[in-house]
Image (cartoon, rainbow, N blue to C red; front, side):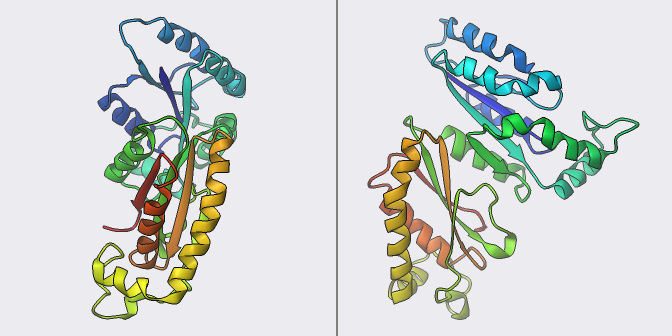
Length: 285
């Protein structure tokens, strides 16, 4: 059995996450009282009509504060029944959350006559702290539209053919901000930039002319070897510590050339020794 617990601040995309999971065969429950988590796990185990039951629940700020504070022990209780429990925590920056609530005119579950929307969003962070601290996977949705969030969830949550740590090697551009959910970040902006070659500017690191240009640059090869040596040594130790997800982010200025090229090479090299390596290019459109 696999149980996915979806949480996060209001407006961060929890409903979208449940929709994606439901579309992929999960039995989904929104706003589960956290105190019922162990009982739900036990009842799901004795359901014999499904050989491998898939269940997803949302636990968020609509819960009683006393239940949320007990989340660590409730999660441990559920996992003691030998159930694979993954905790997904979605979030976005406060400015983005304010904008989303203003656009949809939804009421925040913690706002009232004495608490403004901004105060409710801020207070929600502390309330959900016990869940955020135990999250196996955190996704920041600030810069993701609905379709990008759906694709990210499918890649990270559902594309796991084997048990064990899922590694994501992701390219990005610093001009759009660092991926805040990255565990390891490597800055490759010091390398020769194909952007300044007019014939390469409109292409990406996935295109052969850009790859051929970068492949013959000594600094690029040296950077690749240094990053690969580090990852080859330390990623298995992340896996040995029972981490469910590890994100390695490779960043250049725009996220189109150098970071894309190196991400592709690193992904291919790591796939030879690690079981579950995924590759994503955040800023390629």
